[in-house]
Length: 267
Image 1: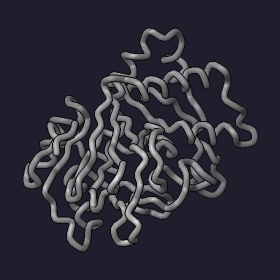
Image 2 (image 1 turned 180 degrees about the horizontal axis):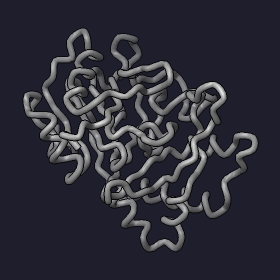
Image 3 (image 1 turned 135 degrees about the horizontal axis):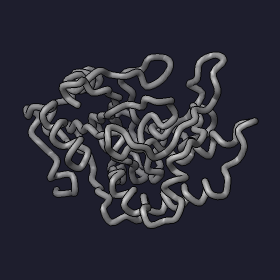
C-alpha cells in the first residue's frame, strides 16, 4: 500500500541521527523507520530509538517519558486534564507540548504498535507553508506572533498559573516555528482573570485553522505497526483523522510517544 509517507520511509537499520539531520531541518520535517519488531516491550524500544536523537523530556509533571497514545474515551481538551492523545477524534492540527511553557520539545516520536482498522491517518502541515499562506492577510501574522494564554491542562506546579502565556508563531534560529492547539487556547482564555479572546485574536485563529484545514501542501499518511516516526515539533503541525477502534481490548490502536530535545550534534 502506497501513501504520502512512502517517500520518507527508510529501513530500520538506517542511521537515525543522520536521517533526522537531513530531513527534519531542511526537508519535510519528519522521517520514518520501517520494519521494526515491537515485541513485548514497545516502550523500551521507543525510548531506545528516541535516545539516539537526543535527551528525552518528561511529558507531564509526574515524569512520564514514554506515553501511550490511545483512546481513553475523552474529547480533545475535555475537562481540566484530558489531552489530544487521550481521544479518538480527528482534526485540531497542533504541536506537542502546546500546554507547556517554553522551551517546548524539539521533536516528538511515535512508535506504532497497533493501528486502528478505520481512520487514524496523520495529517501534517509545515509551518513555512502556513506563514506563506498567511503573509497576504492583513494583521494575522502580527496577531499570531503576540502571546495567547494556553491552558496548562492541570500540569502546573503548586502556586503556578493555570495558563502559560506565549505566541503561536515565532522565529527560532532564523527559522519559522510554531506552538499551537486551538482548544488549549480557548480553555486558557476561559480562566478567571484572563479575559476572553479579543475579536482580532479569534479572527486570526480562525484564519489559521482555515489554512490548516484547506492547504494543498498538507501531507497525509498512516503509520503501520512496526514503524517509528520522528517529527520536527516546532516546524510541523500534525493531527489525525478520527478513528474507529477494534472491539477487543488487546487489539486497540496503540502508539508510544516520546518528547525529545535534540543534542547539539543532531541539531
